[in-house]
Image (tube, rainbow over all chains, first blue to last red; front, side):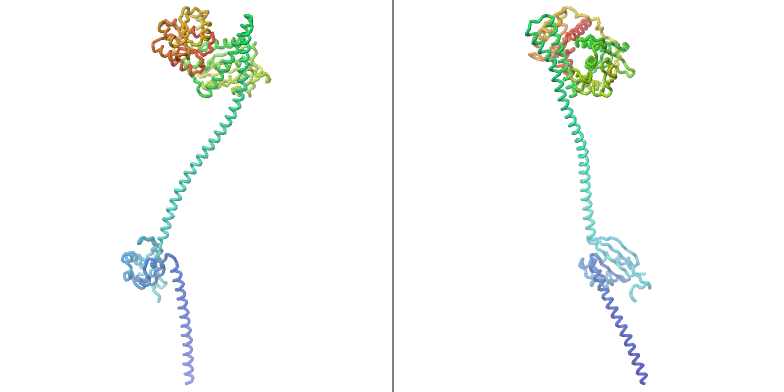
Length: 138
Length: 442
């Protein structure tokens, strides 16, 4: 009986320590990722005249950062997680962006100068793929 | 297969504005560069011009300095050369005027006065010639001329010149007889000017006993070669170019200066340049010098109609000659010249007198026309006479002595021209020539 209780207790302690250690590692990684994201945001937000967007294969905006769209009065939060059609962008903007995003998610590389709303943009884009040919984290 | 898409958008508007600004700046820069290049070219050209101007100024300065030196030499030379004959003229005139002299003395002193006058005239002629040559006003006027006439004139001039110098030089003549019947386009006056100065030079630099050789030949290159050769002191080879410079004179023995204004050979050189002729000097110190000038010949093929002047030894008798001359002394001189000839001489003092006389005497044979008259110009009168079909020879006689005036007289209708002072021999010769021509044409 005592042996059994001792085994259960030691197993519980072992699991506790293991879980605790994993939790601490996870928290540590989260904290690291948060910091990393913070530095990334800090970096991208402060590069003048540059926006970086990441779209999923369905064309939904996963990540966006920079100062170009805000300078045109567009809030990133209004378009994040949405496809171009679902966003609150103007029709002209949508018509301008849609073929570019479509081309990129189809795996094409773009790198050209575009003129839009009396402004000039250098737009570079490419399709992303990890080693497992998986586009989103597992 | 679809991908996650990463898009990076860079707002290049500022960059484009910068590029536009840069393009503008580049354009401005290019404009500035072009302007600079243009200005630089102008400056370079101005610099080149300034360098040229500077060189010209240096040349002008050197020329001015040289002119200044020449002016000084000229004044020094001329002062001496003019005062010397004047001394003879004034001195002997006073002696003749103030003393009871014998006939021989008067004759001798008068001869000295005449010779001094001749020297003075030669100096004035040289100065006027040099002035004309310097100002480019000397006119070379070739005209059809028989070489026989030219050769006769040169012989006559040489004999007269030697005789006027009071010398009994032997003149050894060498003439190519085959060319004498040809006619060529030549300026006799210019040739005589050159010839006389070379002859004068030969006389000056050789002893009285030695002969002077004169040549009149045709070269294989179709040039008329006229030479004057003396047996005088000669010229060292290195000094030959110097002899043609103004006021440069060689001394007989490098100690004794030779009389002369130093213009003779420079006038020769400049006139020959105008004639496009060349001069060659062959000289051996102590043995003699030969100056030979070569004039390009342009023969004119035409029948020879020259008149043999040798047959004309006297003036045709009874000819009616009108002397239009307002200065009585000049008329008296002409009258004295013609005293021994039986000609019918008339004197008119004014244009009106002359016109009146000619109207009443249409058979007049020759008119000696003074140019400056109290009531008008002899040239205008000549023009009017020619308009009235008066065809007799009209010989202009004036103290205006340059070739331009001669040209004007001939243009006005004068047949020939005599510059004052008029020498007797030259005067008689001219009269003979035209009166005989008149008689032939009659």
